[in-house]
Amino acid sequence: MLEFSKITIQNALTLKPYLDVQPFRSCDYTLGAVFQWRAYFRSAFTIVSGMLVMLATYPGEGTCFVYPVGNGDLNAALDAIEAHAKESGMPLRFCAVPKEALSQLCERYGSRAVVSTHRDWADYVYNACDLMDFPGKKYHTQRNHLNRFCKDNPSAVFVPVTEETLPAALAFLDEYEQHAPLDKVIEAEEMKRAKELLADSLVLGQKAGYIDVAGTIVALSVGEVVGDTLHCHVEKARVDYAGSYQAIVSWFAKYAVEKDTLYINREDDSGEENLRYSKLAYRPICMIDKYWVTISES
Image 1 (cartoon, one colour):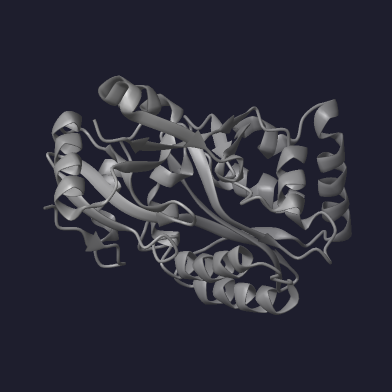
Image 2 (cartoon, rainbow, N blue to C red):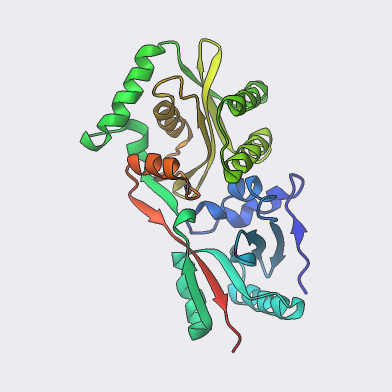
């Protein structure tokens, strides 16, 4: 059987070479998201034939395998997964499978592959230039909110998170938690995981920054670039500063995008109605559906 290790800050960077070469734009295959949610999903990993193989436990789905990524032997990794499932007595099930990988699993397993999807887990993807500048009529509302923020707060500046500024950024999340109602379990969990990711963001090579208004932090974001996509893992802003969310979306994008960055993934909405409304308002160009694939016995 395969031997899986829990993901910790001590071993997390060993996953990065595999995650950085995967071709998907799904947040589930980025180091920041994997580390941030490792406790919630009880994530574990192993390396098989040059491929990263992970386990995750999704609510309502049980423990399942994450689609293998890396530059190694995919078929050998899938063979090892099949053997492990059989020997351990666990179902052969794959979770959060991107559409591009779904066809490969269906080709391998044929009619044995039972496929389902969950709208609540779908990622929102935007054109990077749209979120940087809010151009045109369709972004009229966001642009107005941003302009108001700049007018009301002329001293506002974007501050990158460094070893010197990290303590202030962490203090902002502590303060934010005291004022933001966390009405659902997933919201409280997300806040807890956001703090943990920010605390280790420099070690993990994440990009992070906040907006300072005359010595008061009013918004913060954490993310990373993988391939042609900037993934925003954490995004918090004080609603008592009108336009602060639009400001952190725009200013973080301008700070974090690289020369070849074309898209921004702001991740899923977890089925939260207000968050869904907000993410749709920024006009995503597409949604990244994620599939659960259960392989029935032959």
